[in-house]
Image 1 (tube, rainbow, N blue to C red):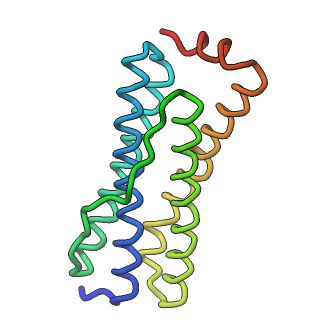
Image 2: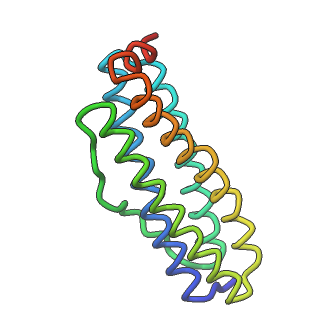
Length: 155
């Protein structure tokens, strides 16, 4: 089925951010594990898996609409400590939320309701799971202090 060029462009734009989120979570999960912060590493690995699923759904939809997926991710912002890791990951998630909303609005304008339905669960997951969890962790670091938070993340 031939997709509308505007929808395909928007899906590809979204894909590069999902790939960047996946890759950023990947390096961050490995850094956290190397530092012995197993609980945080496990959660960030979970987020990487979710981003991989989002990218896969986008790729499937682009291919179904007879497009070519752009597989080059956006630039990564790798953190140097736990707070910067969480802050950088949150920035990516908030960017993805904005892009998802824009693409969903475009789908409604272009009357591509099937693509919109593919994107809605990603929006819910990104807002209510990924971004919310990262915001909670940054708030916990502020409330309890970094040393206490770090101690809570040991295996």
